[in-house]
Length: 398
Ligand SMILES: Cc1cc2nc3c(=O)[nH]c(=O)nc-3n(C[C@H](O)[C@H](O)[C@H](O)COP(=O)(O)OP(=O)(O)OC[C@H]3O[C@@H](n4cnc5c(N)ncnc54)[C@H](O)[C@@H]3O)c2cc1C
Image (cartoon, rainbow, N blue to C red; front, side, top):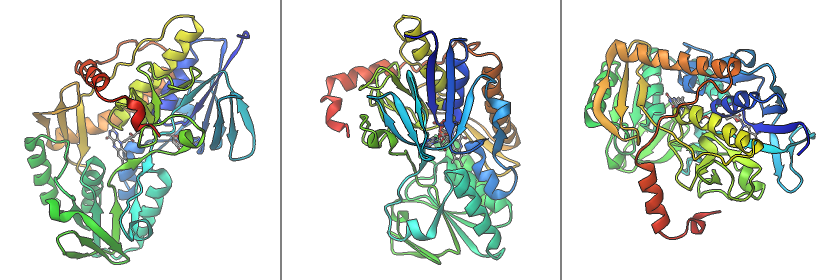
């Protein structure tokens, strides 16, 4: 190893920024962060961008450590044999270690007409497009939000609060993650905002047209604006570059977040699949995985064995417009329990979480490595043991 170690981080989202900042702990490590935009996107506020209450971006000067070199470009390919990445702009950047943190975007809807006529909201550009489409639609035009996970619920509430006539099509149950008490609370607030909630198995969307949404039970809903929030998908960069991924395309790693193919590559955030048992795609796990991916690299540089990853969840916090919200508490293994905080306190807590998340990034930028304690999911060892007892994970690898 030469005196200086080059680490390239692909993706400047929650996981990538946390990883890049932590890596600056060592003066002999040069960190390059590659991201397609010159500003940090607060993805957890994209529904607010659509509703007009926040622009969902923060300057990297606020969240990135001074020592990190930011390259605004997109990685086109990873060459693990040559230890370099090729950028869409044509340049190549070499590395000693690589952090793969490309996050997620909209999943392929796989429903006729959805790709053409429905509007996703998973990226900054998609949210901007949707905002323009909503603004161009008449105030009374019917808006349909497809998908009743947190993103769908938050988007439906935000648009209803802005005076839109919103129908939320669940395609099953409202908020599958939620405890029945949390679900009742959210259903009540959505009703108060005037959102029509359609749930049950017959509400799976079978087709989207320019001005309607068709459901499995035969109903056809008029829809001037259709918003698609049913699931995230990950970029195919790892698979395209010949790295092993899980069936969804997340980079397959061991419990230290190290690629199963290459000790020089680690992964974090939505695009990582540790032990083929990925954590829930969330900002909550990304801010925990990012620094731990960096710690794995730092351990290797120090000649020490990297520690297994440790991630715990507190629950799910869902905004319901600007004046209400629900914090659905959960066990550390991410199972919702009966406790929740709703109403205006729920909204305040959600806003606090959004602000604290950005603060967490900037704290890591100023004091890399100060945070050393990780929440633990006590059930993960059992899941790993169960997985080991089953057929080899390689059968699922792409
Ligand atoms: C509307 C909405 C609300 C949400 N609310 C919550 C919430 O309340 N709580 C919660 O926990 N989660 C929430 N999420 C999910 C959360 O935003 C994501 O799980 C989180 O952003 C994942 O972080 P990440 O760092 O892995 O990826 P991202 O934040 O997606 O960042 C990845 C970065 O990598 C970049 N990138 C991708 N490909 C390349 C490439 N080839 N080269 C270079 N850069 C690349 C991307 O452009 C992006 O900047 C929400 C998501 C949405 C859309």
